[in-house]
Image 1 (tube, rainbow, N blue to C red):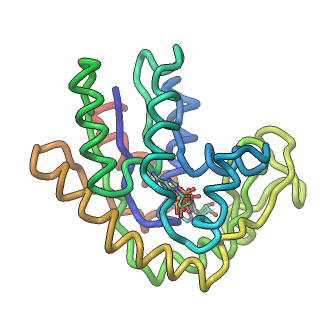
Image 2: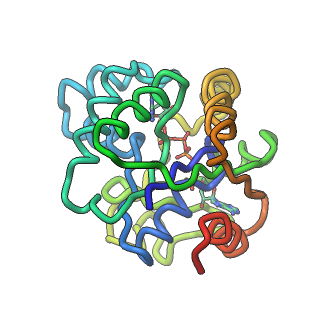
Length: 215
Ligand code: AP5
């Protein structure tokens, strides 16, 4: 199944995509992780994306659409995948629909993680993410077993440059202005499910599975 995960920064999309991806074998396609990997590699794409990301702005559509289109062609995507962080505005949603019309693929479900903005600042300022595999931890609610080291792959945990409070507030403003309308786009064709993202991770996982009709 192809699943679109929608929700504000810090709502838990990456956390849940990683949990279900490990269980179901549907890869997590995170445009944020791909862009950060490009920055770490020092590629031209990373160089162009970094300024936008550090400011909490969206990276230009043409860069992101090409990136995700190439990734979706990889053999591991054959049985389905999670789109985490894409589409992020209406132009990206329309580009995705067009691409799927050409390839004969279809989105099974778009799931909106609902949570109030005030809850997200603490989640993101306390987040530490693995530099290598992107797994998110939290200093208070999900600390790693060894400080600074990823439980999943042994990579180094870092505080993302865009997880500072001033940038988080800009990302939230961008979310409400540009990404929230994508939920209405999928609601119109009956594909949208909403889940309460304020619950703990186990309950959110149950809600997500219910929304996807899997157990
Ligand atoms: P991206 O990397 O996609 O960031 P985001 O959407 O802002 O999402 P986050 O990764 O911040 O949050 P999340 O919902 O995955 O939460 P998580 O599970 O980590 O994008 C970054 C930037 O890249 C963008 O600003 C933009 O510049 C660019 N970009 C990316 N895609 C783009 C696109 N398509 N177009 C243009 N530009 C693009 O959880 C957060 C924290 O909360 C963690 O510490 C976690 O442990 C904790 N937590 C998770 N779930 C729970 C829970 N249920 N209860 C308590 N704590 C929880």
